[in-house]
Length: 493
Image (tube, rainbow, N blue to C red; front, side):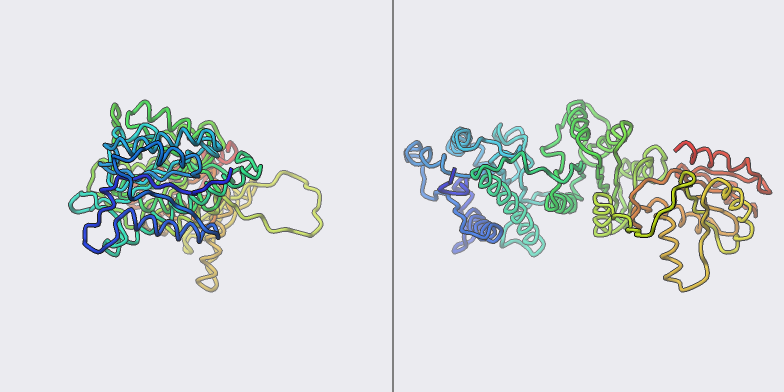
């Protein structure tokens, strides 16, 4: 049907009282900015209705109930006064009743109500119909004091920026839902508008909330469905059940790890961040699933529990298996995420293809220091009987050498690091490159990683161990049997 008003703003009138005389109220500012942004996004006039004059002695039925069936979506502005107001509760309930007769209360699996949280309210105190919604939080947590500060158009510069980002998110989502309502009125079913894919974007600790929101915004803008689509339960068993169900609908999960440990649900010893990661590992056992884990490059933490979790991510092969761990700037991570979701098509080869004579060989990138080229040659010769073997290039322009190295990391099936003349710092650098391998555009997991410890013998080499790769101690001269564990992994993968 055609609506008389696109949006109805439901709010408590005390929340529109200006703190400074002569300034517009918070609701008034939201109304104006939302209308302008919606008209820019939709390219046409948008009608937003709120009644600034309604008082407790007005006749509710005559004023609101007659108009609510002709409203597209409702914006509920939550505050302490809102949840205490019988009037506001009736607006919400009457809209939901009316929506059933005008296209349904839910369209494309989305409720036609948008929850704007002006002032934080515990979830259990919110209206029952809104508790399961993620909502748009127009407040931030002050790092030093721990106080929650309201965002507004007249806040500090940083808070203003966050305000406009939140408002833009709200406007985009309302515009999308109004577009779906309009298409359904023209006979186009919402079910025919399929997402490009489903991504599980794990809930993060509060210090990464803005950056997580940025990832979510980009994924939604690119046409992906992003889960979870409602707040996680705060009781351990219920949370685990819900996350498992959400992960089962996805082939990729994204985990963002910051300096804070995160909320620990009741009846649980791990934080929500850790719990989601463990359940994603469990999901990967079923196959057709991978994880991307991001950490800021300058990440530090004073929380011992978080420090232990980060250490495990960097050293525990169980946590690393089937995952790409990137400690990069956020924009670089976005690039990797985009490549993982949209892997580039292989270049088209128009040349006539000869009939294959045998299966395509797996490839090994044998990484070594330039001083070890001769010593590594017996390993290369042995592996070449079974695999394609590539050694690093050291001659030529530095940038070209680096690009060749990154291309080898991207394309190889397995990597073998020859730890001979290089020191432990060199080795750690090579292992970190393998951890960040997705950052070079790699779209498939590496099947085997190993460190071959060769002469000269040093105390560092004797002490060396890692969960990130198979460690092979040559014990002196090269023997083919030393590489058997590495070869076996390649054959079994």
